[in-house]
Image 1 (cartoon, rainbow, N blue to C red):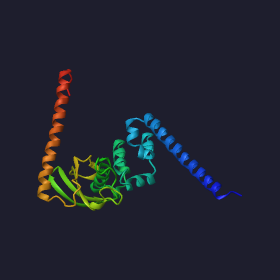
Image 2: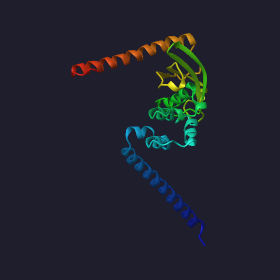
Image 3: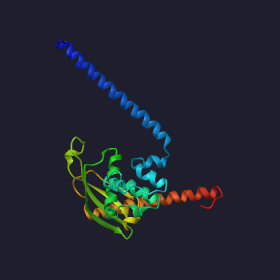
Image 4: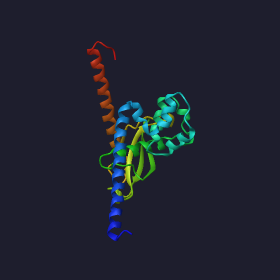
Length: 226
């Protein structure tokens, strides 16, 4: 019969084996993931999280409706689903009852927050508040969001974010002009929001105009009509 000391050594040995096994499995996954990424094109990598739909569309086949619903329900993959269906001219396959500017902006906002250096994760909750028309072509959507512990912003509770999009039907939805948040609990007053949004839009449009002009100039220099 094993004494208490032997039992303790056996337990430690088992724990050690489990830890080492977990480490090697994790390392193998990292290595496999790295080499798998090297094999993917930029487009394949972009839609890797919804590859069950992407692969079918790439083969000119119809995706499984249950996969379409699954990716639409997930706030992380909703925007990818919309983008891949538009890419293959198959937006008619998007779950019609779920297609709205609000739902799409919600997904873009969640993904933006995940990539934001300060927030650095997907929020646990997002709610649409209201929409303000800036001009005939642009509206600003107001959302509030929050995350639970142990997130660094958990103690702030609900915070406000603003998404500037093209005014139009959801089927014509485009990537937001801008997404902004100060991570504040107070909503920006509407009059100030309109003024600041117009400034931001003017700046973005000026950048785009400069980019196109630069592109045109390079084309003329090379003897090409752009």
